[in-house]
Length: 223
Image (cartoon, rainbow, N blue to C red):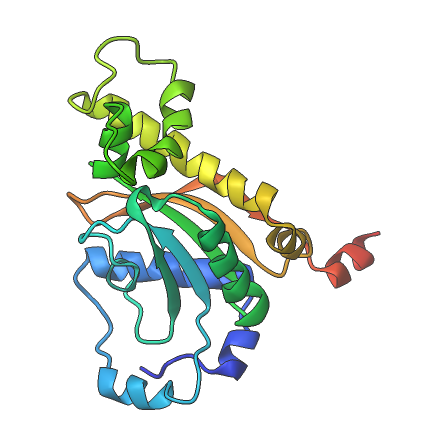
């Protein structure tokens, strides 16, 4: 399978890009991954890259976006930070991915049994990690449904906090990047939160977090 090029990337819609990711995860879970000639893709991408999506995920060794979504070289921007935390550097990377490099969709991918989320739940403080976990802690405080055992030992609590943190991260991207927000409003790109299950390999997309505007020409026709 060939790597994406400028033409194939430009012809994709945000909806199609998301569907590529859905289908890729289905192949991954079914162990039906596409047979790719990676050395050929190295040659095809030596002059440039045209990824169709950008995935913000955790640094966890089990959460490689290329594997989870069954994609090849040059297909996705993979932005990885403990807890899939959204920092200024992540926002800048996403702006480059979408505004400059032409990616059509952003996925914020949380995962089950996340060590960073557990650390935030337990109020861990350690060197520079303290500041990073501090960006997750608002999700810990926002989770109100679980009263007892609000620690990393309670899997239900960790899972609930992870979902909230992922949703908050989607909101942060839209609220703190004027560039990306405008692109979403115009239907040029889309964004969604999702959860990866490290036990099954399944990605569950949180449809209520999906944001996708309408292209200007579509808006004009419906007016």
